[in-house]
Length: 84
Image (cartoon, rainbow, N blue to C red; front, side, top):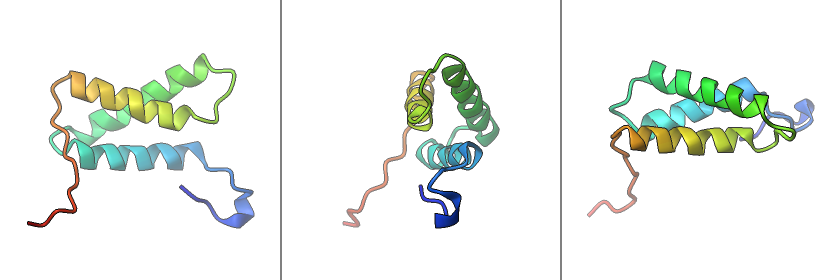
């Protein structure tokens, strides 16, 4: 995730969270996108509320939402480069 040089390298959290929603939607194609978005935003807020350092919150958010979707029986689509 990169931002223009003029931004000072700081990623807008909302942009980063939207990217996570898009990534998770690709990995869990059977899941509802609005459900994924809600989980991502709720999880991020919960983590941020309890954090003293927030530099890794987006990555932690993705991990926790992935675990929750898997725990709920979500089927994970894993991209394969093998075309055979």
